[in-house]
Image 1 (cartoon, rainbow, N blue to C red):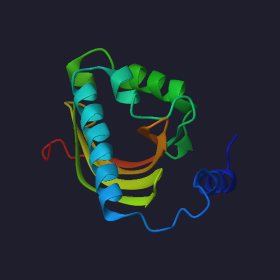
Image 2: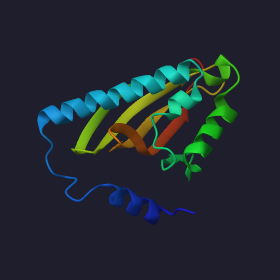
Image 3: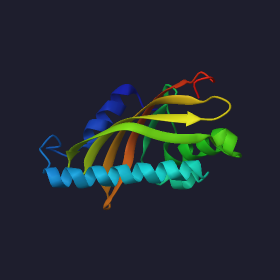
Length: 158
């Protein structure tokens, strides 16, 4: 079982030596565009009910996913959670929107995204914040660590 200490150590170890070194502006811009494209593909996949397509944005199998005050069981465990809790009908899945995102490119193969999301559905509409560590692995930007902080929306607000 992972503890906070091992999670923090893992996050630090995930960054290469010199991770705080400056990245040229053009490289950082390309990284941000690529990461925004990953998020757009994930949002579209969710909204059409393609949970595997949504999960393509995460490192497989190594993603660390923190939600509801606990660490999920990796890539497959997270996919299973989405299918179990959100699958079946469009009303259960809801409509997902990511917004107010900022991306800090830490080095040539690591970036951090902090952004908001809203999931509108008849039951348990929610909104929250995602903090995501992206890594460039095999030429693709993927989420290697994802932390979600969410709250239920007032049904009148959604």
